[in-house]
Image (cartoon, rainbow, N blue to C red; front, side):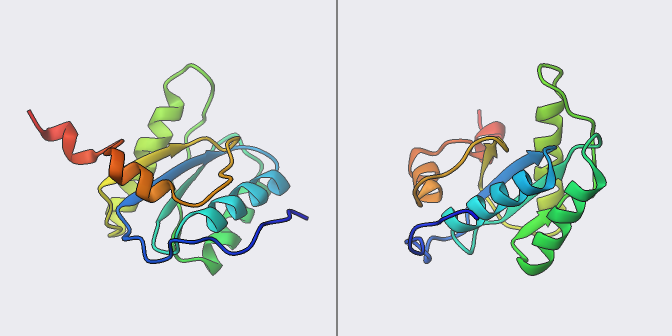
Length: 142
């Protein structure tokens, strides 16, 4: 079992950050990755999850079960085959952004999170907003 430290701080952070993650790994690994995101991001932060088309059906089932009990986790119904250095990873993240917007989630920033990365402290939302990283509006500004 994954040991987690005491409950995170910063629950009042306004939801302006969408976390996008693509998964393809075995179900147990994906479960731990989702639990890490759930623990270290605020309850107001939406998390969009893309399951690779090549992933085992059980991996999708794990994500669906997790999302069913945590409404801020969004299982993206679109599934692309993903592979390193092909552009498919970016396509999956863009699909997550489109899905989150289509279901009405509000966000101004996007974190492209790797399934193999882990958070070790809370606060990514405040850091991203303060530094203005991945600001969507900037794409349309001159």
